Image 1: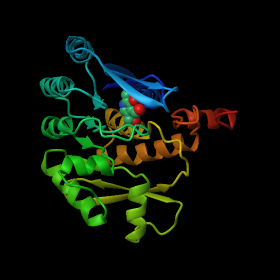
Image 2: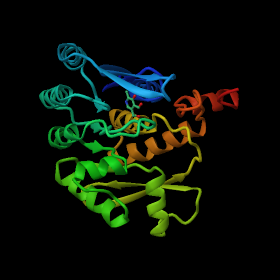
Image 3: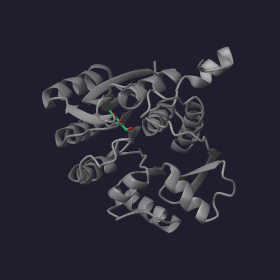
Length: 285
Ligand code: PXL
């Protein structure tokens, strides 16, 4: 059996974090494991404000022992780490167990939460985890943070950020879309029709533009988690990084096609939507 582990936070609402990762692994037909770094809960009495409860260091270490020593994994992804010790522990276990297929999703902000989690932590993520990553999957904000740039507002800056991030040790840098990337690419003439989404993959030498249908939805909670989980799952199945990213983009496009509201604040994609559509002809009532 192909096995994969996520080192990530739990999202009690089920759309992001390790819940999104495990749902995605399931769709790829592989065995998923999770080492929980923190628990995120949301308050419906306070505009869906996020609270984050870190898991104690010894409890995280015990889970990593279970996953790495007790079972072993063909690929690993990390998501929201939340504490310095979680970053250190992830680095320790990924290097000790020589994990080649490691996908770093440098989660720095929750959609809907608005604020960066912890700028000092971002620097440690860059220092300790980028050198171990086969693939890193920042959005524009995270790419700027990892590259030490103030902000990214042009194609030239996207390329500069990707080169700096690769220079810090990640083999492949996948800069994920979002409306700001869409705006920049439209201004640069890369996007020629409004219904197109173009993401950027840098392999250390060349830039690849990956084109898909743009799914016009506000319900994108967990999309970043899902796309990095899907890329890691493809790599666990033996795809090249390029092939894994292409398939991950297809997967998130299909997931967002089935996106839906959980309440008035938040809505996720549906990782199993493609299967429901093929079985039932529709994904939800
Ligand atoms: O979508 C980023 C994210 C990642 N991980 C956890 C989260 C969130 C956003 O809510 O809760 C655990």
